[in-house]
View 1 (cartoon, rainbow, N blue to C red):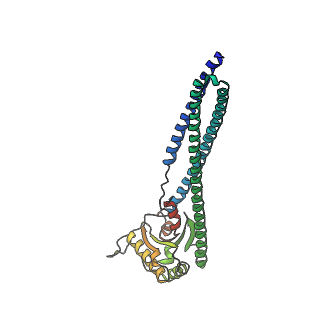
View 2: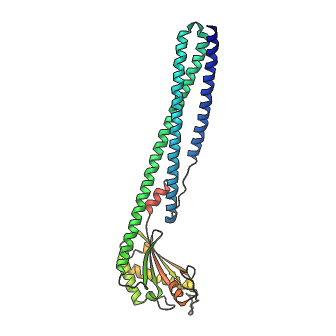
View 3: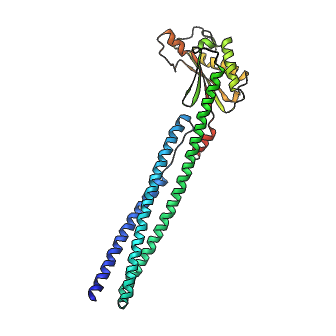
Length: 318
């Protein structure tokens, strides 16, 4: 009977020490997890090119949150297992207590400590469960926002393709050498050669160019869901006829872009969505080393971009 009494407190001390170590490690891990989650933040900017990058970033964050959720679930399972083990140990000690009631003094003290440990672990388990539920809710909200972003981007891409088709159909009667229509970076680029629009050094649009611009305006008129930028471009040959208002290629490109904007607006395009921009000789598409390449650089680009207010609003609220 004395041998059993000596063995029991030692065994209880070992069990209590092991449980305390596990609880401390669990608390440290949870504190670290909480700090990591609180430090996550997504910085999103209102540019379409950067919007795609931000979407990728969100997807990476979503994957990390899924991993964190799995890690928390694993921790939850470990704590739950510990709880079951402690409950089992508690039941064993309770049985010993009933069998060794004559030695109740020491046993009661050990049993009280074990009960406190059990209650502490149950509290930790409840905290862990609530954190897991909060993480699952947050993950669900993030998934919904990502799904909405993907839907809006798909709609934007579809709108861009439809706009490209409308513009292409409207300008079918012009040759490939006069103009081209293509999609780049989620925008529709209508590139018009100088020979279609202007005489050498002139800022007045030729008759053929006016016809093309009127046909394009027919597609754009009444549409306020676009941003239209008209960019004038030149080669690197200095202008031969200077005036008070035009002293270099930059002035020439701006004045040409403005002339085109006025024709578009006069034919029904909302002036609030149109911007005239001159790039001069500084964004060539070919080396200015041959007459053919210089002709390619003397162009006007009309850039059509669907408005993305709804998409940027979601990004700002993320």
